[in-house]
Image (cartoon, rainbow, N blue to C red; front, side):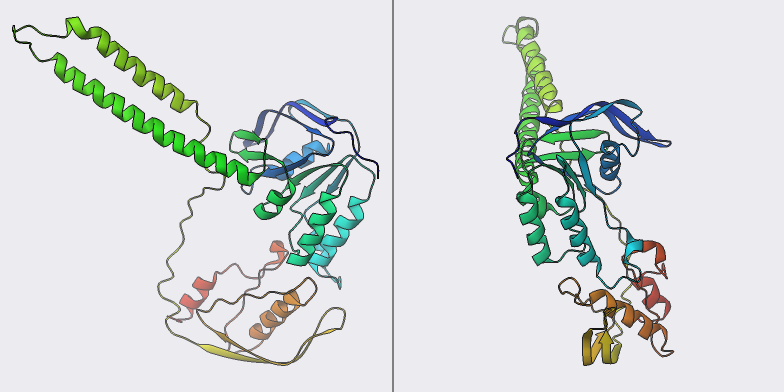
Length: 351
């Protein structure tokens, strides 16, 4: 492939407004992307990352403003859960195939929506290699901060009613953010010190000198100077960059009421477990599960993690002496039970 011409603008977003019927997402949004740039698009769930990608793709139209393309755009969406039904490939394998097929299409800008979802560590490294050698520009919406730090040189951070453009990766933004937080602390300390001086001076003004006269009239200019310094410090504090972290959330977790104190062990014998491709995943295997225990299931894409989870769900739900199992899979719309683990064990007196 020929080397790209750097600094040539391939996408311009000019003063774009967009809102849903009950929610405003973007107001006066403006930025541009040049050939060869790698830009991360980050923000909490529901903030509008996928919506912004759809605006760029002209799948939806802005309320106001213009989006101008200077080249062809390719798009890699979040995986379509329905595509995994009755497909022998794992979600991760399908994901990587989709990316590999798209990345070689002619185009000057590639949009990626959560590209590392379902990929194992080896395939993430393969993806990183492919994207680093991609000649066009990249706009990557992702929560995988390690991945985008290694890939992207610029960052767009979406926050409620605010968009931050940072000329570095997200790790560098956090570094700068920490410096800004320290600046806030320093300004607060400065304001407190100035206010203390002002209070002390007010007390001094109320005192009489040795002749019995008040000193306030001759020292009013000092008080005005102190007040001016306090106001200037407060104004500088207001103009500092935002002090809230983009991923700062307050989540109230329920109390589990010690439901796991009564330990119950379940033994499961698996004679043979086959993959959708009729390959052996497990053979003559015994599993022991215990209440209150959290187990991690890891393996490469296509190794059978999802198949094993589905097998265990069916196994538990067809044994009358075992608790019913809840399975939360790739397709959340097909989740069969909305009862939490804590609810289940508490209801069944595993306390």
